[in-house]
Every structure is written in C-alpha cells, then in structure tokens.
Length: 185
Image (tube, rainbow, N blue to C red; front, top):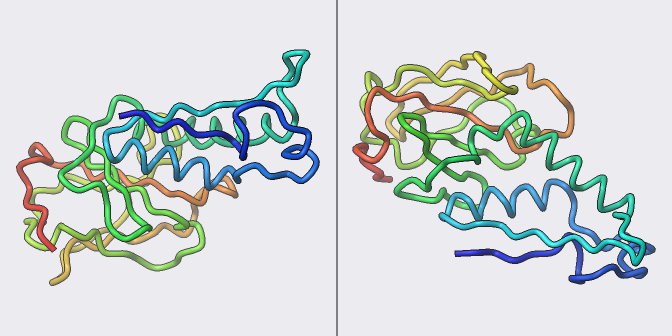
C-alpha cells in the first residue's frame, strides 16, 4: 500500500505554508515514514516547489533532517519487511531484515534507563546474538539487554551521538529467523 502525504497542508507550493511554517516537523515526518514502513507500506512524500522550481528553505530543512536520520538509521528502513506485529502503543515500531529485528523507539532521545520489547515475553535469551544501537553505517555499538518476566529489556545508551535524533533504533541480532519467534504479550 502507498501512503501519500505532504510536508505541510498542501500538495503544491503555498505562501501560507511558508509564511506560517505549517510544515510537519522532521520528527513527525520520520515517524510517518517509520510507521508506514513497519506496516509494509511505501511513503510517497510530496514536496511543493516554487514556480521557479526551487525548493523553499523550510522544506529543504525537513528533507535534509530526514536524510540525516536515514544516513544513520537507514539499515532499519531500506530493504526491510514488517514483522509479525508492526509495533505497540504509539512508541515502538518493528522492521525485519534477514536475522535482525529492528526496534525503533519514538522519542527515545528523551528517555533514560531501559525499555521492554513487548511481544518478546516467551523468547529465550539464547536466541539473541547481540543488541546494537545504530549510530551510522557499520555501527558496532552493543548495548546491554536482559530477559525479564515481561520480555527482553534493552538499556538505552547514555551516549547517543547527534542531537535531534529523537527516534532511536536498536538492532536485535538473532540466531534464527525473526518470524519463528513467538509474538506474545
């Protein structure tokens, strides 16, 4: 399925959008992309260039912000498939590639401590090779994780890199196909 969306409120250039800055924030646009991909969709993001073909600065800023996040976390978006569950609540989304389950946590940059990966309650800790925090291409930043009665608990690292990266991505590297794991609460 395809999710057509705009940066703001219009499918073309609008002085009102520019003057009143009626555009979605970078974080809102990223979550729209993440949510769509986690549900096996494609985001068709419309931009509204001016009559002379230039892209207004407010639109450029949003696109560059999305590009910055994708440069760091694109592994969790490009070439992925949805998992058994798209996510839970409005805070977590899942995607899968090979033997990696990506956990994308909304507003995690504001979080401290740890969080539980829902649907992992019946997983065996030995099914997990490692958990990485994505910080860019070939990221090898391992984070600690443990098994609790509620599921797999991932510790959010203190050092997260670039500011403004509110949607943090964790890669759970598994020893088996993620689709063979139970997805129970």
